[in-house]
Image (tube, rainbow, N blue to C red; front, side, top):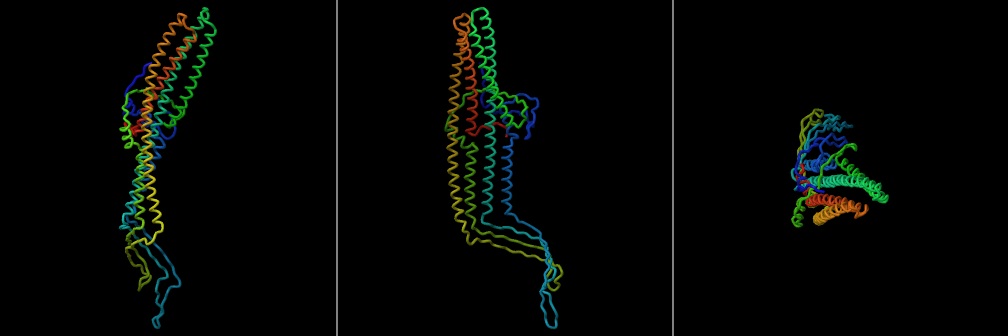
Length: 445
């Protein structure tokens, strides 16, 4: 069986998405369409998947928190109006002059005012830096979600493609067995074969049909997973095209590891977390520094001598310094922030080790798949030749029906083994791209 081969990277070459605008969060039926490539399916999954939307919403929330933190630098304004009635009214009595009210019975006060922190020794800047580091972590978190979804989509896509090809091989085997059964029955009628030969062939047909049922069940499960990823209804038919594309790739562990350290979003997130801890340590260190604020109010009120009931314009302005004198929590908070930095440093180092292990394992998987393909090609050629010889000898009566069935079954198994090795190689190359952080390269963002 021949398999067309083109470079693996072609699967990631940008192409026009034929199902643009097709998928929504609510399940829906797919209209008539051409078969989809792996790139198109990945794009469709990433376009509207709820996990991507959730990660994007988290990022927007973090952007809003940055704006909220920065607002501490800006003045705040407000208006206030009060009415107070007092009694008894404070009065003074002077002999011969009568009573003098010191305050009105009805007191009115309406004013607008504002306040602003003019200097806080970098506390607001440090808080903004913490939020900005968290925002970067949110951005990298979107890449993690997208990469994981893309990897799951690739595995599901090629599992479906492999199972569909397997069904074709099983179908070919069943057709061959059916033809063989017809020939055997004719030989029984002619007296050159026995009922045992018919029963043996029928047993092989039953085994092949049982295997086909298992493959169909596995295919149905994988198609269900793909529909869930795409967010379409259970009755939607999704046609895919995914050949096992084989191309040699360079496997330089050090180079690939260096690339992974720069591109893997998990590494970036670990570094983001370390940066957040450092920025928070700076913020906590400035917790006992003073702040200088100014405030001003403008409005109208009564209670001014000589006419206590008349409303007069008034204003008040001032400057205030808030100086922490003693904060028993400052020391423990600084120790906690310092320990958090050390913890994030250790976490980042652990992630980098895990990335190296991922790269090494992906390289080993590619190499193993390459060897299996080479072995499977040789095995297929050998079983093909053996089946051809068995068919010739069966015609001349040199081998039994069981010998021929064994030879043809071995050939079908070798075809399936080669197919599995080829798709395993394709998946291993995609896994290598995931391990190095380049899985999404070439896919429309």
